[in-house]
Image (cartoon, rainbow, N blue to C red; front, side, top):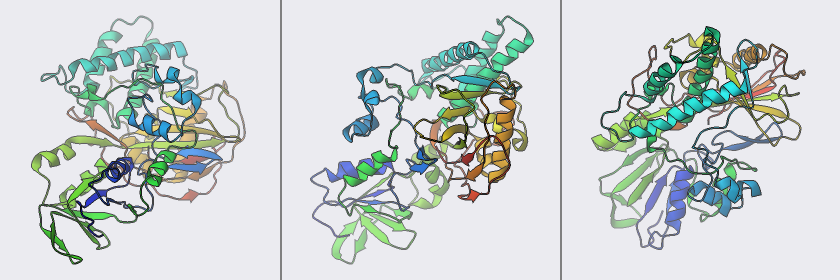
Length: 470
Protein backbone atom coordinates (compact mmCIF):
# COMPACT_ATOMS: atom_id res chain seq x y z
CA UNK A 1 0.00 0.00 0.00
CA UNK A 2 2.14 2.85 -1.28
CA UNK A 3 1.91 6.47 -0.27
CA UNK A 4 0.86 8.62 -3.19
CA UNK A 5 1.52 12.12 -1.98
CA UNK A 6 -1.46 12.54 0.33
CA UNK A 7 -2.86 11.21 3.58
CA UNK A 8 -3.44 7.48 3.67
CA UNK A 9 -7.01 6.73 4.78
CA UNK A 10 -8.45 3.32 5.67
CA UNK A 11 -12.11 2.44 6.15
CA UNK A 12 -12.80 -0.57 8.39
CA UNK A 13 -16.03 -2.28 7.37
CA UNK A 14 -17.64 -2.59 3.93
CA UNK A 15 -21.29 -2.13 4.86
CA UNK A 16 -23.29 0.77 3.48
CA UNK A 17 -21.63 3.24 5.90
CA UNK A 18 -18.15 2.12 4.85
CA UNK A 19 -19.06 2.22 1.18
CA UNK A 20 -20.53 5.71 1.56
CA UNK A 21 -17.32 6.85 3.26
CA UNK A 22 -15.24 5.32 0.45
CA UNK A 23 -17.34 7.05 -2.20
CA UNK A 24 -16.84 10.41 -0.53
CA UNK A 25 -13.10 9.83 -0.08
CA UNK A 26 -12.60 8.72 -3.69
CA UNK A 27 -14.19 11.96 -4.82
CA UNK A 28 -11.80 14.07 -2.75
CA UNK A 29 -8.75 15.39 -4.64
CA UNK A 30 -6.50 15.29 -1.57
CA UNK A 31 -7.16 11.60 -0.76
CA UNK A 32 -5.17 9.70 -3.40
CA UNK A 33 -6.04 6.10 -2.64
CA UNK A 34 -8.39 5.07 0.19
CA UNK A 35 -8.88 1.42 1.03
CA UNK A 36 -11.83 -0.44 2.58
CA UNK A 37 -10.99 -3.48 4.74
CA UNK A 38 -13.97 -5.84 4.75
CA UNK A 39 -13.99 -8.93 6.98
CA UNK A 40 -16.07 -11.09 4.64
CA UNK A 41 -16.01 -11.99 0.96
CA UNK A 42 -18.76 -9.53 0.06
CA UNK A 43 -19.69 -5.89 0.54
CA UNK A 44 -22.97 -4.62 1.90
CA UNK A 45 -22.93 -5.81 5.50
CA UNK A 46 -26.48 -6.36 6.71
CA UNK A 47 -27.85 -5.45 3.29
CA UNK A 48 -28.12 -8.82 1.63
CA UNK A 49 -30.55 -9.99 -1.05
CA UNK A 50 -30.83 -13.62 -2.09
CA UNK A 51 -32.65 -15.55 -4.77
CA UNK A 52 -34.91 -17.92 -2.86
CA UNK A 53 -38.38 -19.35 -3.44
CA UNK A 54 -38.12 -18.24 -7.07
CA UNK A 55 -37.75 -14.55 -6.24
CA UNK A 56 -35.78 -11.96 -4.29
CA UNK A 57 -35.67 -12.39 -0.52
CA UNK A 58 -34.23 -9.64 1.67
CA UNK A 59 -32.11 -11.49 4.19
CA UNK A 60 -31.09 -8.18 5.72
CA UNK A 61 -32.39 -4.62 5.30
CA UNK A 62 -35.89 -4.59 3.86
CA UNK A 63 -37.41 -1.16 3.32
CA UNK A 64 -36.47 2.41 2.56
CA UNK A 65 -38.18 4.17 5.45
CA UNK A 66 -39.38 7.63 4.47
CA UNK A 67 -38.48 7.48 0.75
CA UNK A 68 -38.33 11.19 -0.07
CA UNK A 69 -35.74 13.79 -1.05
CA UNK A 70 -34.43 14.17 2.50
CA UNK A 71 -33.46 10.49 2.61
CA UNK A 72 -29.93 9.78 1.26
CA UNK A 73 -30.73 6.10 0.68
CA UNK A 74 -33.70 7.11 -1.48
CA UNK A 75 -31.56 9.61 -3.35
CA UNK A 76 -28.93 6.96 -4.13
CA UNK A 77 -31.55 4.40 -5.15
CA UNK A 78 -33.12 6.94 -7.52
CA UNK A 79 -29.74 7.91 -8.91
CA UNK A 80 -28.93 4.29 -9.75
CA UNK A 81 -32.36 3.62 -11.25
CA UNK A 82 -33.25 0.94 -8.69
CA UNK A 83 -36.83 2.05 -7.95
CA UNK A 84 -40.05 1.83 -9.94
CA UNK A 85 -42.37 4.59 -11.05
CA UNK A 86 -44.63 4.20 -8.02
CA UNK A 87 -41.74 4.48 -5.55
CA UNK A 88 -40.39 7.54 -7.38
CA UNK A 89 -43.73 9.31 -7.71
CA UNK A 90 -44.29 12.65 -5.99
CA UNK A 91 -47.46 11.22 -4.47
CA UNK A 92 -45.53 8.43 -2.77
CA UNK A 93 -42.89 10.83 -1.49
CA UNK A 94 -45.45 13.12 0.10
CA UNK A 95 -47.32 10.53 2.15
CA UNK A 96 -47.09 11.36 5.86
CA UNK A 97 -47.03 7.96 7.57
CA UNK A 98 -45.52 9.28 10.79
CA UNK A 99 -42.98 6.47 10.75
CA UNK A 100 -45.62 3.91 11.74
CA UNK A 101 -46.03 0.53 9.99
CA UNK A 102 -49.17 -0.19 8.02
CA UNK A 103 -52.19 -1.87 9.59
CA UNK A 104 -52.80 -5.59 9.10
CA UNK A 105 -55.00 -6.89 6.31
CA UNK A 106 -56.12 -9.79 8.51
CA UNK A 107 -55.90 -10.39 12.26
CA UNK A 108 -56.23 -13.80 13.86
CA UNK A 109 -56.65 -14.52 17.55
CA UNK A 110 -54.91 -17.45 19.22
CA UNK A 111 -58.31 -19.13 19.66
CA UNK A 112 -58.72 -19.30 15.89
CA UNK A 113 -61.26 -16.50 15.61
CA UNK A 114 -60.79 -13.48 13.38
CA UNK A 115 -60.23 -10.17 15.15
CA UNK A 116 -62.26 -7.22 13.92
CA UNK A 117 -60.08 -4.96 11.80
CA UNK A 118 -62.10 -2.04 13.14
CA UNK A 119 -60.98 -2.97 16.66
CA UNK A 120 -57.38 -3.36 15.45
CA UNK A 121 -57.51 0.08 13.84
CA UNK A 122 -58.96 1.58 17.03
CA UNK A 123 -56.18 0.11 19.17
CA UNK A 124 -53.54 1.10 16.59
CA UNK A 125 -54.80 4.67 16.71
CA UNK A 126 -54.50 4.69 20.50
CA UNK A 127 -51.06 3.08 20.49
CA UNK A 128 -49.52 5.34 17.87
CA UNK A 129 -51.10 8.42 19.38
CA UNK A 130 -49.26 7.54 22.58
CA UNK A 131 -46.04 6.81 20.68
CA UNK A 132 -46.28 10.25 19.09
CA UNK A 133 -46.72 11.80 22.52
CA UNK A 134 -43.35 10.46 23.62
CA UNK A 135 -41.80 13.21 21.50
CA UNK A 136 -43.01 15.69 24.08
CA UNK A 137 -40.22 14.53 26.40
CA UNK A 138 -37.32 14.95 23.97
CA UNK A 139 -34.27 16.05 25.99
CA UNK A 140 -36.41 16.34 29.11
CA UNK A 141 -34.20 16.47 32.19
CA UNK A 142 -36.95 14.97 34.35
CA UNK A 143 -39.22 12.71 32.29
CA UNK A 144 -42.33 11.52 34.17
CA UNK A 145 -41.20 7.88 33.94
CA UNK A 146 -37.88 6.30 32.90
CA UNK A 147 -38.89 4.32 29.82
CA UNK A 148 -41.15 4.36 26.79
CA UNK A 149 -42.72 1.16 28.07
CA UNK A 150 -43.56 2.72 31.42
CA UNK A 151 -45.14 5.71 29.71
CA UNK A 152 -47.21 3.62 27.31
CA UNK A 153 -48.47 1.34 30.07
CA UNK A 154 -49.31 4.21 32.37
CA UNK A 155 -51.41 5.87 29.69
CA UNK A 156 -53.06 2.61 28.63
CA UNK A 157 -54.08 1.89 32.23
CA UNK A 158 -55.71 5.32 32.32
CA UNK A 159 -57.51 4.70 29.02
CA UNK A 160 -58.60 1.18 29.96
CA UNK A 161 -60.30 2.44 33.12
CA UNK A 162 -62.92 4.13 30.95
CA UNK A 163 -63.53 1.23 28.55
CA UNK A 164 -67.07 -0.10 28.47
CA UNK A 165 -68.14 -3.63 27.65
CA UNK A 166 -67.56 -7.00 29.24
CA UNK A 167 -64.26 -8.30 30.55
CA UNK A 168 -63.59 -10.45 27.48
CA UNK A 169 -63.87 -7.39 25.23
CA UNK A 170 -61.42 -5.46 27.43
CA UNK A 171 -58.99 -8.38 27.47
CA UNK A 172 -59.10 -8.58 23.67
CA UNK A 173 -58.28 -4.87 23.41
CA UNK A 174 -55.28 -5.34 25.67
CA UNK A 175 -54.18 -8.38 23.66
CA UNK A 176 -54.32 -6.36 20.44
CA UNK A 177 -52.32 -3.60 22.11
CA UNK A 178 -49.77 -6.18 23.22
CA UNK A 179 -49.34 -7.17 19.58
CA UNK A 180 -48.45 -3.55 18.82
CA UNK A 181 -45.96 -3.56 21.70
CA UNK A 182 -44.29 -6.58 20.08
CA UNK A 183 -44.23 -4.76 16.76
CA UNK A 184 -42.63 -1.72 18.35
CA UNK A 185 -39.98 -4.01 19.88
CA UNK A 186 -39.05 -5.08 16.35
CA UNK A 187 -38.96 -1.45 15.18
CA UNK A 188 -36.78 -0.41 18.13
CA UNK A 189 -34.64 -3.56 18.19
CA UNK A 190 -35.33 -4.33 21.82
CA UNK A 191 -36.63 -7.12 24.01
CA UNK A 192 -39.00 -4.76 25.82
CA UNK A 193 -40.01 -1.13 25.51
CA UNK A 194 -39.17 -0.93 29.23
CA UNK A 195 -35.52 -0.90 28.14
CA UNK A 196 -35.93 2.15 25.88
CA UNK A 197 -35.33 5.54 27.50
CA UNK A 198 -38.25 7.95 27.23
CA UNK A 199 -36.43 11.30 27.07
CA UNK A 200 -34.37 10.73 23.87
CA UNK A 201 -36.93 8.51 22.10
CA UNK A 202 -38.11 11.42 19.95
CA UNK A 203 -34.68 11.95 18.41
CA UNK A 204 -35.60 9.59 15.57
CA UNK A 205 -36.44 11.76 12.55
CA UNK A 206 -39.63 10.94 10.64
CA UNK A 207 -39.34 11.56 6.91
CA UNK A 208 -42.34 11.71 4.59
CA UNK A 209 -42.90 8.98 2.04
CA UNK A 210 -44.59 5.60 1.99
CA UNK A 211 -42.06 2.90 2.91
CA UNK A 212 -40.96 1.02 -0.18
CA UNK A 213 -38.75 -1.87 -1.22
CA UNK A 214 -36.32 -2.46 -4.07
CA UNK A 215 -37.97 -4.45 -6.90
CA UNK A 216 -34.63 -6.06 -7.76
CA UNK A 217 -33.35 -6.39 -4.20
CA UNK A 218 -31.82 -3.99 -1.68
CA UNK A 219 -28.35 -5.33 -2.42
CA UNK A 220 -28.52 -3.67 -5.83
CA UNK A 221 -27.82 -0.42 -3.98
CA UNK A 222 -24.55 -1.58 -2.41
CA UNK A 223 -23.56 -3.37 -5.62
CA UNK A 224 -23.83 -0.06 -7.46
CA UNK A 225 -21.84 1.71 -4.75
CA UNK A 226 -19.04 -0.87 -5.03
CA UNK A 227 -19.07 -0.58 -8.81
CA UNK A 228 -18.58 3.19 -8.51
CA UNK A 229 -15.28 2.72 -6.66
CA UNK A 230 -11.88 2.17 -8.29
CA UNK A 231 -11.19 -1.52 -8.67
CA UNK A 232 -8.58 -1.94 -5.93
CA UNK A 233 -10.30 0.09 -3.19
CA UNK A 234 -12.11 -2.92 -1.69
CA UNK A 235 -9.98 -5.45 0.20
CA UNK A 236 -12.08 -8.50 1.08
CA UNK A 237 -11.55 -11.26 3.64
CA UNK A 238 -9.58 -8.93 5.91
CA UNK A 239 -11.12 -9.10 9.38
CA UNK A 240 -9.50 -6.48 11.58
CA UNK A 241 -8.13 -7.58 14.94
CA UNK A 242 -6.91 -4.31 16.48
CA UNK A 243 -6.71 -0.65 15.57
CA UNK A 244 -3.50 0.73 17.11
CA UNK A 245 -3.63 4.50 17.40
CA UNK A 246 -1.73 7.38 19.04
CA UNK A 247 1.46 5.81 17.74
CA UNK A 248 4.32 6.43 15.33
CA UNK A 249 4.34 3.45 12.98
CA UNK A 250 6.64 2.93 10.03
CA UNK A 251 6.56 0.98 6.80
CA UNK A 252 9.62 -0.59 5.22
CA UNK A 253 8.70 0.72 1.77
CA UNK A 254 8.61 4.30 3.07
CA UNK A 255 11.63 4.85 5.34
CA UNK A 256 11.44 8.00 7.39
CA UNK A 257 7.66 8.38 7.14
CA UNK A 258 5.55 7.69 10.24
CA UNK A 259 1.86 6.94 10.57
CA UNK A 260 -0.23 7.59 13.70
CA UNK A 261 -2.47 4.56 13.14
CA UNK A 262 -1.78 0.89 12.43
CA UNK A 263 -4.58 -1.53 11.54
CA UNK A 264 -3.70 -5.11 12.44
CA UNK A 265 -5.73 -7.87 10.77
CA UNK A 266 -6.53 -11.37 11.97
CA UNK A 267 -4.27 -12.89 9.29
CA UNK A 268 -1.26 -10.92 10.57
CA UNK A 269 -1.23 -8.28 7.82
CA UNK A 270 -0.69 -4.70 9.00
CA UNK A 271 -1.82 -1.46 7.36
CA UNK A 272 -0.30 1.80 8.59
CA UNK A 273 -2.42 4.90 7.92
CA UNK A 274 -2.81 8.56 8.72
CA UNK A 275 -6.55 8.25 9.34
CA UNK A 276 -8.93 5.33 9.94
CA UNK A 277 -12.72 5.45 9.71
CA UNK A 278 -14.35 2.63 11.69
CA UNK A 279 -17.81 1.58 10.44
CA UNK A 280 -18.20 -1.83 12.07
CA UNK A 281 -21.61 -2.70 13.61
CA UNK A 282 -22.35 -1.60 17.15
CA UNK A 283 -22.86 -5.23 18.19
CA UNK A 284 -19.31 -6.03 17.06
CA UNK A 285 -17.94 -3.07 19.02
CA UNK A 286 -19.78 -4.21 22.14
CA UNK A 287 -18.33 -7.69 21.82
CA UNK A 288 -14.74 -6.65 21.05
CA UNK A 289 -14.45 -3.25 22.73
CA UNK A 290 -11.71 -4.34 25.15
CA UNK A 291 -9.38 -5.60 22.42
CA UNK A 292 -10.32 -3.74 19.23
CA UNK A 293 -8.63 -0.43 20.10
CA UNK A 294 -5.11 -0.02 21.47
CA UNK A 295 -4.90 2.10 23.53
CA UNK A 296 -8.52 1.79 24.67
CA UNK A 297 -11.00 4.44 23.57
CA UNK A 298 -11.58 7.42 25.85
CA UNK A 299 -13.95 6.61 28.68
CA UNK A 300 -16.84 8.67 27.32
CA UNK A 301 -16.70 6.90 23.94
CA UNK A 302 -16.43 3.45 25.51
CA UNK A 303 -19.38 4.22 27.79
CA UNK A 304 -21.45 5.40 24.81
CA UNK A 305 -20.81 2.07 23.05
CA UNK A 306 -21.77 0.12 26.17
CA UNK A 307 -24.91 2.12 26.89
CA UNK A 308 -26.49 2.27 23.43
CA UNK A 309 -28.78 -0.71 23.08
CA UNK A 310 -28.34 -3.23 20.26
CA UNK A 311 -31.07 -5.80 19.88
CA UNK A 312 -31.79 -8.98 18.00
CA UNK A 313 -34.37 -9.17 15.23
CA UNK A 314 -35.05 -12.22 13.12
CA UNK A 315 -37.03 -12.75 9.97
CA UNK A 316 -38.76 -16.07 9.34
CA UNK A 317 -39.66 -17.03 5.78
CA UNK A 318 -42.42 -19.57 5.18
CA UNK A 319 -43.23 -20.89 1.72
CA UNK A 320 -46.62 -22.45 0.94
CA UNK A 321 -47.78 -24.52 -1.99
CA UNK A 322 -51.19 -22.88 -1.61
CA UNK A 323 -51.89 -19.58 0.19
CA UNK A 324 -54.41 -19.58 3.04
CA UNK A 325 -54.70 -15.79 2.83
CA UNK A 326 -56.75 -13.70 0.42
CA UNK A 327 -55.11 -12.40 -2.78
CA UNK A 328 -55.07 -8.77 -1.63
CA UNK A 329 -53.73 -9.56 1.87
CA UNK A 330 -50.48 -7.79 2.75
CA UNK A 331 -50.00 -8.12 6.52
CA UNK A 332 -51.28 -10.91 8.80
CA UNK A 333 -51.40 -10.12 12.51
CA UNK A 334 -51.42 -12.74 15.28
CA UNK A 335 -53.06 -11.76 18.58
CA UNK A 336 -52.50 -13.87 21.69
CA UNK A 337 -55.66 -13.49 23.74
CA UNK A 338 -53.99 -14.31 27.05
CA UNK A 339 -51.44 -11.50 26.68
CA UNK A 340 -51.50 -7.94 27.98
CA UNK A 341 -48.93 -5.13 28.01
CA UNK A 342 -50.03 -4.35 31.58
CA UNK A 343 -48.78 -7.69 32.89
CA UNK A 344 -45.09 -8.28 33.50
CA UNK A 345 -45.35 -12.06 33.40
CA UNK A 346 -42.23 -13.77 32.04
CA UNK A 347 -43.33 -17.14 30.64
CA UNK A 348 -40.87 -19.89 29.80
CA UNK A 349 -39.13 -19.19 26.51
CA UNK A 350 -39.27 -22.88 25.70
CA UNK A 351 -43.05 -22.89 25.84
CA UNK A 352 -43.92 -19.40 24.59
CA UNK A 353 -41.13 -17.88 22.49
CA UNK A 354 -43.38 -17.81 19.43
CA UNK A 355 -45.82 -15.46 21.18
CA UNK A 356 -43.37 -12.63 20.46
CA UNK A 357 -44.05 -13.04 16.73
CA UNK A 358 -45.77 -9.94 15.41
CA UNK A 359 -47.33 -11.83 12.52
CA UNK A 360 -46.40 -12.16 8.88
CA UNK A 361 -45.82 -9.98 5.85
CA UNK A 362 -47.04 -11.40 2.54
CA UNK A 363 -44.08 -11.06 0.19
CA UNK A 364 -44.99 -9.92 -3.33
CA UNK A 365 -43.06 -10.62 -6.51
CA UNK A 366 -43.01 -14.42 -6.61
CA UNK A 367 -44.41 -15.95 -9.78
CA UNK A 368 -45.35 -19.36 -8.43
CA UNK A 369 -44.36 -19.38 -4.74
CA UNK A 370 -46.45 -18.11 -1.83
CA UNK A 371 -44.17 -16.68 0.85
CA UNK A 372 -44.77 -15.16 4.26
CA UNK A 373 -42.13 -13.27 6.24
CA UNK A 374 -42.50 -13.27 10.02
CA UNK A 375 -40.70 -10.93 12.42
CA UNK A 376 -39.61 -11.54 15.99
CA UNK A 377 -37.34 -9.58 18.36
CA UNK A 378 -35.71 -9.78 21.77
CA UNK A 379 -34.84 -12.71 23.99
CA UNK A 380 -37.44 -14.83 22.24
CA UNK A 381 -35.65 -14.17 18.97
CA UNK A 382 -32.33 -15.19 20.49
CA UNK A 383 -33.87 -18.30 22.01
CA UNK A 384 -35.31 -19.28 18.64
CA UNK A 385 -31.79 -19.29 17.20
CA UNK A 386 -30.86 -22.10 19.62
CA UNK A 387 -33.61 -24.38 18.33
CA UNK A 388 -33.26 -26.89 15.55
CA UNK A 389 -34.86 -26.35 12.17
CA UNK A 390 -37.47 -28.96 12.96
CA UNK A 391 -38.37 -27.41 16.32
CA UNK A 392 -38.90 -23.97 14.81
CA UNK A 393 -40.97 -25.31 11.95
CA UNK A 394 -43.03 -27.49 14.29
CA UNK A 395 -43.82 -24.56 16.58
CA UNK A 396 -44.82 -22.26 13.74
CA UNK A 397 -46.91 -24.98 12.16
CA UNK A 398 -48.81 -25.33 15.43
CA UNK A 399 -49.24 -21.55 15.67
CA UNK A 400 -50.70 -21.28 12.19
CA UNK A 401 -52.97 -24.28 12.70
CA UNK A 402 -54.18 -22.78 15.96
CA UNK A 403 -54.89 -19.25 14.74
CA UNK A 404 -56.61 -20.43 11.56
CA UNK A 405 -58.58 -23.21 13.26
CA UNK A 406 -61.95 -21.60 12.63
CA UNK A 407 -61.75 -22.52 8.97
CA UNK A 408 -62.00 -18.97 7.66
CA UNK A 409 -58.88 -19.41 5.56
CA UNK A 410 -58.12 -21.11 2.31
CA UNK A 411 -56.74 -24.64 2.53
CA UNK A 412 -54.01 -26.46 0.67
CA UNK A 413 -51.49 -29.28 0.98
CA UNK A 414 -47.89 -28.38 1.75
CA UNK A 415 -44.53 -30.12 1.76
CA UNK A 416 -42.14 -28.42 4.18
CA UNK A 417 -38.41 -27.97 3.89
CA UNK A 418 -36.27 -25.87 6.21
CA UNK A 419 -33.51 -23.35 5.53
CA UNK A 420 -31.68 -21.31 8.18
CA UNK A 421 -29.53 -18.26 7.50
CA UNK A 422 -27.07 -16.39 9.69
CA UNK A 423 -28.82 -14.30 12.34
CA UNK A 424 -27.61 -10.97 13.69
CA UNK A 425 -29.01 -8.11 15.73
CA UNK A 426 -29.91 -5.15 13.60
CA UNK A 427 -31.23 -2.12 15.43
CA UNK A 428 -29.98 0.33 18.02
CA UNK A 429 -31.88 2.11 20.75
CA UNK A 430 -31.15 4.69 23.42
CA UNK A 431 -31.28 2.89 26.74
CA UNK A 432 -32.11 4.32 30.10
CA UNK A 433 -35.35 2.61 31.05
CA UNK A 434 -35.74 -0.09 33.64
CA UNK A 435 -35.28 -3.79 32.85
CA UNK A 436 -38.67 -5.50 32.49
CA UNK A 437 -39.78 -7.69 35.37
CA UNK A 438 -38.45 -11.19 34.94
CA UNK A 439 -35.98 -10.18 32.23
CA UNK A 440 -32.51 -11.68 32.27
CA UNK A 441 -31.16 -8.39 30.95
CA UNK A 442 -31.27 -6.34 27.78
CA UNK A 443 -31.00 -8.08 24.45
CA UNK A 444 -27.45 -7.79 23.22
CA UNK A 445 -25.73 -8.83 20.01
CA UNK A 446 -27.21 -12.07 18.79
CA UNK A 447 -25.57 -15.44 18.59
CA UNK A 448 -25.33 -17.09 15.20
CA UNK A 449 -27.88 -19.56 13.94
CA UNK A 450 -26.86 -22.66 12.04
CA UNK A 451 -26.54 -22.24 8.30
CA UNK A 452 -27.94 -25.56 7.22
CA UNK A 453 -30.67 -27.01 5.06
CA UNK A 454 -32.75 -29.41 7.09
CA UNK A 455 -34.81 -32.41 5.99
CA UNK A 456 -38.48 -32.28 5.16
CA UNK A 457 -40.89 -33.07 7.98
CA UNK A 458 -44.57 -33.92 8.13
CA UNK A 459 -46.12 -30.54 8.91
CA UNK A 460 -49.06 -29.67 6.66
CA UNK A 461 -48.94 -25.88 6.88
CA UNK A 462 -45.66 -24.03 6.15
CA UNK A 463 -43.48 -24.99 3.28
CA UNK A 464 -39.97 -23.66 3.65
CA UNK A 465 -38.50 -21.66 6.47
CA UNK A 466 -35.63 -19.19 6.71
CA UNK A 467 -34.29 -17.34 9.74
CA UNK A 468 -32.07 -14.46 8.63
CA UNK A 469 -31.09 -11.21 10.24
CA UNK A 470 -33.12 -8.08 9.63
